[in-house]
Image (cartoon, rainbow, N blue to C red):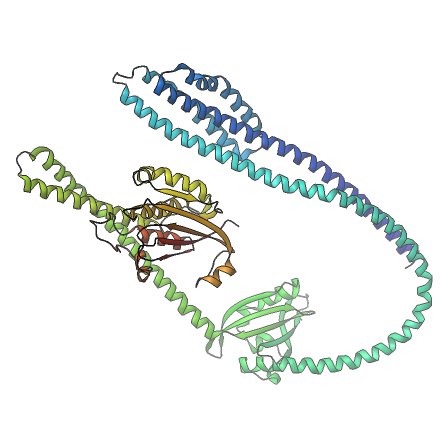
Length: 606
């Protein structure tokens, strides 16, 4: 290294130190901004929670007033009128920091205003409790309940978006906090190392002059040895090329007077390439590509030129007319000096098989779509005559009941029951056919929250049968929420319905996250995701013979008569279709009189 090189090295070290100092300042500045962002998002979550709490208290208060007419219950409602506007203003003031929640904040303000107006209207209706406004009061309560549910959803979306922002900010904060001391240490080490390096290189500069003469003599000896090795390696490489199952060819560019590539000439071809192309090495080496394989002019010439000029690899599969026969080749071309090296293999048989499989798959998909379309249209068109049957039956009962004897009334009742059963069958068929027709995308689903909603829908059945449902903390899954609600509602409802007469139903729901590798060890299953959630729904019901463990998931499959247990026999078929639509599996384990275990494998949120 001479004096000029030392100066250049010094300049590089100083430039690197300056850049590191600028980077360190940038990291510190970003860290401060990130901390401020986290504070703002936390303020959004706190304010949203406060708004939701005020609305909930107002809702609870007016219901207490409706029951007791005690004015003290209205205090939360009056507080909400006073304070909620200020809290929403606060939320507006910081919503500009997070544009993703601006729309939800505006919607929350609108929904809260609507809810307070509904409460005000309910309170006015309550003052006329024994007047004709009582029906209006019931309607307002129902509207308020739906609006309150929408407020909760919007508040949860705001909090979910805020938590995502916090999570991203915390990651950035950790990175900035970790990088800053490292940057300072690197600056110190580079400064020290730079000085040491400059000193060392200056000393070595003198020693290198003495070594050069000795190294030159050694280099001549090494060159002779390297020449021998290259000859040996060349012979070995030739043997490897000729024993390769893949065709290998090397080309160099042929350019015109303007330097543009117009063709390539063969410089190497192994034995496999001669067998696959029905050409000898003598016929190819030294000849031009388009002369031997003119079909390349329209298929591959431009790609080969691009590889040679840019150095970008080419990977492709192409159908080629070789001496009148259609042959599929898998090709990899890489740059080699002023040319390229190509390896290729004959994949004609594989392509024929692939085309057959693709055709079979398309035919199967068309068949399934036709079946689903038929089920949907048939179920939909059957509803109109069924509505007329039920309508005329209702008219017979209402207008001609006194003119009919007991037998006639009995026949009409049986007709109405049969029509209702058919209505249930049609609705279940429609639900069954809609599963795969849904365009809704899967999202993160909190099973614990979902089960709370399911139990709320089944509250009458749970209370009537004195059922007990125990739910462990289950990891979230990736799915369509509406379909997941239907899945677990069917399973829990069945567990309660098929109870032992002398024992109250007990349903236990547990779950764990498992890897795809572990899943393939336990089940005959090809996973589409890295992680899954295994959920078990257990009950203490009547159970069933294990020989029916697959049969129970078939459409209209029943193990008991209609007089024993109500239902259409489609519930478990819907469950299986929902799980399959989500890329999972469902199975059942049971024994007569010993309860049942339904095992669900659903994709996890990675």
